[in-house]
Length: 394
Image (cartoon, rainbow, N blue to C red; front, side):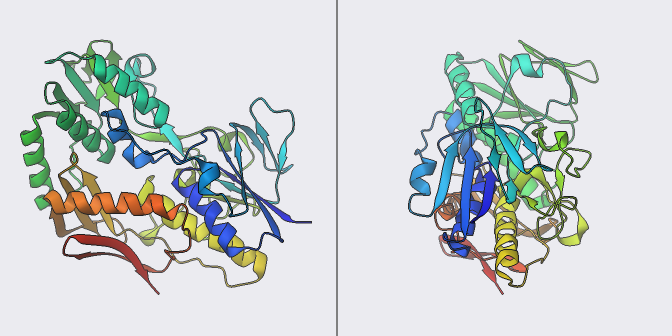
């Protein structure tokens, strides 16, 4: 009988894992099933573009994986039983059995129990959420305020994209700490200048404790008025894994070893946001596309190696850069150490925007070309003239 591999989730991590497994293993030996709720591959790193009014090309999963041997099943995962090795799909009586499971269900917004987030905010955690934000944005009149809550990469990109697309609106950011304060000083200065150019008001050290229809309340009692609030204050994983007997972290992420294999169930692998994996330096890898892709490489190659008797890769995953788009014509590329610490190497302006766009485009391209980028111990960002690309060396 064929070895049954089931991949749950077709975001960056799940889709790349499924495609890479199809290239690494012979279809006479394995049956690969990819389960996803949306029929299209969603470029999550572009949701701020979709929300601001830009149209993105459709990438139907069945077309992406046509001819690869990967069976695409459009369904929502309801539950996983890792002891019986089954997956329950919403609305379907038949359960899906597996021999190896790849859990890549990703993440959604974290509201931290703050009142009003569910009722009064919008987000860019997925395609439908971004489209709802887009519809509400179109309803706003000139002079009205859009408030983005959060100070991370997503917050910055959403604020810049909306400010560029709708210069008639007032755009503001409210962050618990600083905005972009993890960047090198040069990058921080450039970011502040970009905010000034775009007319973005920044409220730092503004810990939001309640959201209402007309703005937010902070821990100091200050009210920040807004006709629309966008919540980008963090992400959390779906509760499905925590409801199983899998070993999970205190945040519900599946605890895995260096090969992305569950420490409690050896027939389960986790990749992307759903995995609690240590990177270079021993720190847990942060959620994001930058970690989803190398985790997919590592996990797929580990599964293929174990099934074929080859050496299992277990090199720690490191970082290369942080890329921030500031609208369509501006950006920041912050070079970081493998342990994700900023360096003094910073690329800004149009060049930064071009690099960010090329990386986003190449990541989407790699979904259907999963063997062109191979994992290794070292990852670098190379820039030559107007061309930039991530590459790896052995």
